[in-house]
Amino acid sequence: MSRVITAPGQRASLWTAALDALEPHAPTDLLELGSGDRLVVAVPHPDDETLAVGGLLQRLHSTGVQIVLILATAGEAAYGEIGDRALALGRIRLREFREAIAALGLDPVEVHQLDLPDGRLDEYEAALLEAFTGTLSVQPPGARGRTAVLAPWTKDPHPDHQAVGRAAGAAARHAGSVRWSYPVWMRHVLHPEDPEIPWPDLRRVALCSAERTRKLAAIGLYPSQLKGPTVETGPVLPPYVVAHFTDGHELLIRPAPDDDEVGAHFEALYEGSADPWQVGSSWYEQRKRSILLASLPRLRYRSAWEPGCSLGHLTAELAQRCDRLLSSDISPRAVAGARHLVAADNVTIDVAQTPVQVPELGSGSCDLVVLSEFLYYLPDRARAATIELAGELLAPGGHVVVAHWRGHPADAHCSGEQANAEVVAAFGSSLVHHVDEHFVLDVAAAGDLDVEPRAAEHGDRADRVAPADRVAPANGAERP
Image (cartoon, rainbow, N blue to C red):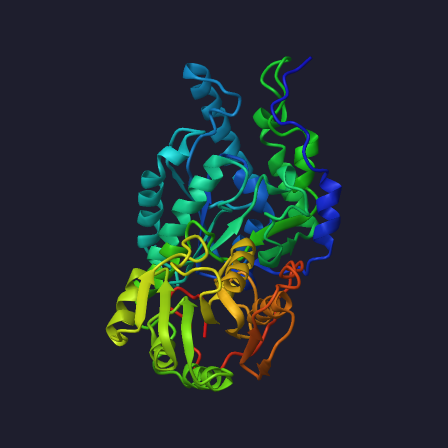
């Protein structure tokens, strides 16, 4: 009996059926790339590039996009080998990699080979970050100036993939490049209904017949992974795994930061601009603040909580209506700006990641919670936990006000309309409901939370026209 290397996981047919329901997208549209632009692809092991994105790389290459592959390891530890046998397998896999790239039709292609230890990339994130940063800092001749980054999903069920995803994401933020993610082992390991699946952020690329044929041929050029090294050892890629990558569906995950990178993401925005969304000057922001304040049922509140306060422009106006106001933001730069703007004895502004770092407020101690342009940046679980926390902090009869741009910012996990709907569903009803072309605002009263916030629907989003003065930060993230 052969030793199983990759045990059976989820049936490929389950995923194929689930993905059939997603609208197909063109990778050029998703990544906003055209002829002369550059795509830097972070690849943990030889074969990840072919399995996960071999089809969409063909299409991008055919439109004139310059493909750059950064290969972190030689994949020498696939079967747990060490010493000379591992080195020999690494050489084989690198040869297979070059042959597969040629079979995909990607030549000429720029390849950076890092030769880091397979299976230990979490120990080498600094080296990965340095390598990715160096590549992104060089602008090759002929490039128009736009560079996008494609990296493994930071929650892909493989520690090497997670490490590469984190490092590439940090490098992309520092370079001001948009970073999209791709899953590799997600479909094999996780059921389509697993709560970890980022359905609202998944985008499907449907491969044409020629792309599928080339991809299948390229996969076949990895015999070291398709066949076990000995009679007693099974392959890394048995047929039930390969089936996940040959159904014509490839997936990208839109660039919303995960829990472990959201702080760096927003700090980078404020590092690049003193006011990334022009909250102090845009008419959109001024009008929204005025309507929010006018919608509050009471003239005066005893104690209020405002997470995600940004530079403190709303904080300054709330301070005039509250005896005590506790505000926070995940970005130290934003908090410094808010403290400079709001110098009031009744206001405390701290650095905090909500809901991981809970405010020093007791249960039922607040009569106002303000969630403005904040919730949709939180992943599903964190968003639900924050709404629950708001319910715990509010005293009976207290108010929660939630306001968001109606659309789906590029670096958010859901649309503003969905975020507001989750709050209204949790609190049972809305005392005030304002919706216009640009934003949605709700005020709800505290009581027993009636239902859990609704789960995000597959592909759920609300595409709206942005206000004319709505400015996107330098890294391409859209937010009012």
